[in-house]
Image (cartoon, rainbow, N blue to C red; front, side, top):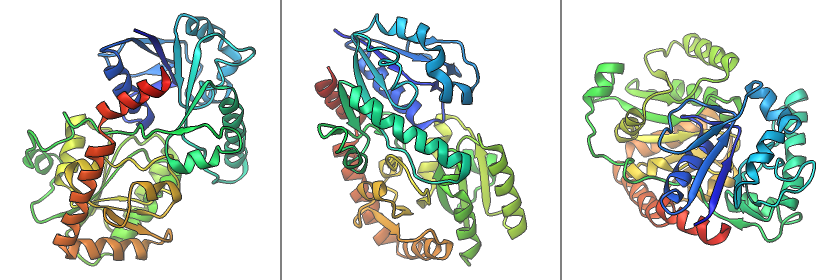
Length: 363
């Protein structure tokens, strides 16, 4: 039995990486002594042991965490292995000096987008990612695209998909369409396009809104499910929807229960994602045999191959609309893609299988 720490700046529901940590920690905890170390938590993952350090604020923790990492480093010395995901957590085992705990770092890559301060910040994170990767004992890449980007600094990095699926909860059991109908007015004849994720500007929800406006069929509705952390972007999106006159066709749910997330996957006709960049495109929709339409960013190609969905070559609302309409009009084509996706995730992305691979590589 190993003593394993998962160190991350947050441990909250609705954050993709936090959810990965929860699923890994929950399963590894059946055989090992596992604890999550973090600065912020909402208590949603109460069945996993958690140590919470004092937070100076989300942005301060993310940028300046190394300046007050002494307490964290002292705690890490109690473990055999520390698993990290992002800076500054990935730097804490090494600065100002190396601790004895074995460090397993997962690299998700850093998007090269934005201007001014945002670009400077992304450049800084990319540089730190390289430094941390050089010093970690083991480097896991979230997808092949990220592994290739690390070849110069860590040619021994191993691709390990960690955004998996818990098939115990991600299924049709207990689904009742009346719940969404009563809460949101979703009707049986509505064609629902689903996006699940935070409203980060680079996820291009604005393009998805424009896409809906370009689809003539008024029964087509877009449901955006997830945290609305970016208040300025939230306001812009709401203004955009109002300006286009499609308030009845675009729904922002904010954070919802896990049961409701599952309900949305059960109910949707397609999953859509126009994000400019992701370390790995989360394919939960495939657990429900739903096809995916996404932007053709390199990491997305590992999830959405031609047999499982459509990749749109440009960030163009009209092209997204054309892809969506093509699949909505051809139910057999759409169903085949969803079935192919289900077969793939069952083979590759079952969390139980991911944990077995993580344990084999990291311990």
